[in-house]
Image (cartoon, rainbow, N blue to C red):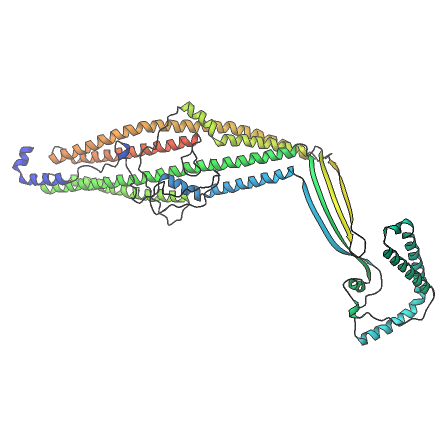
Length: 585
């Protein structure tokens, strides 16, 4: 072959042109983690220390109020998790439910304290009676009204005198009986004098009513004689009195049949359940964001692999055309290279479409604006190791998984609610005390004060079976929680075993795939040398290119599957990824 090249200058020129062409694919996946296929980060990517902590609040369950991350720059996995925690709607709903549970606990704890209430009222009490109302009128109206009154009064006066005399005599007797004897000692001299004057007036009225007299016209009261004290009395023709009342009432339940303490404990357990629910959703959100991030990583590196495959196919097509033009190649080799390039370009188009789709899926998980184009900053490499055995991992999961504690809390809450239901059929003992102040504003007497104190017992003799039925319902809920606990243990064990097995398998696949990439890279190099030397075929180069692309894809899948399995195993044992949000482990 070398002799042939020495005798043929045309072949020497073609060999020199082929020597200048690229001979291998870009090494996207290397044997060491430092040279693993990467999505290169921008030089301006913010570091972890440069970012403002999202949660300065010492409360580990409180959500961050602000987040300062430039979404226009490539994001690391930790930054993506922080953005998701800040924006996730489900996590915010769980936080609100936790606040509601805490408020409900404070509401139930209020039953442990006595209640104190203050009541006050002031009002006007009227009773029918008296004379018709007189309003200020003009002179003509007064004269006409007086004439009508004179005519009516003359006809009715004689009949009314007898009745009025009887009524006045009865009032005089009652007044005399009321203010006779020791009752007058409670009044002052001035009040005694006023009472005597009222008694004398009633007696005079009685004597006048008993003796018919000539009727004299009634003079209407002018406006200046009306005042706020007698206006309503004159207006409606009724006796009236304004009263003021104030009361202070205290009540405290001494014994509630055990329902009060059970309700407080159930509310406290509900708060703990809500706290665990926030942690559970946080751990699940971290796992979901991690998987979406790894999926976007894989799509991006697949684009790089596809681009390298297209570049390699273009080199092969150029070589085939050069050989065909030099007369040492065939048209079949050119057609084969063109088909390989078309396939590589189609794979590149699909890879780019998948990259766009996965990045939008990650943006949706982060709940950011639709105009934000999330980019990947981290390199594809194994994220860590798992040094525990399968048995130790299962035991650790039983200790740390919040779902198991939630099932136990559901059972405890149901049993406490059962006690609350049964307490309704037990005696209820309460202490009450009250003080009352009463004053009649229109009289001259001082306000009067009264009080009351005592114990009250209440017992429901028959409720139609409501308490027992409610207690039976809570017993069924407790039994259901026990079954859910056993089922949850089996599911957790399966999750740990599955993640652990996948982790170990992918760990072995990484070593195998790295060896395959090294061998495929060397095989492509040798195939090109053989083809350029004229001892190899175009098909050998095409097969070598395909083998290298497949080996690079296998290594990428092995590394990302290992990372996914590690994230799933951490979630299975109750260890979320490290974040700056409260320092969760």
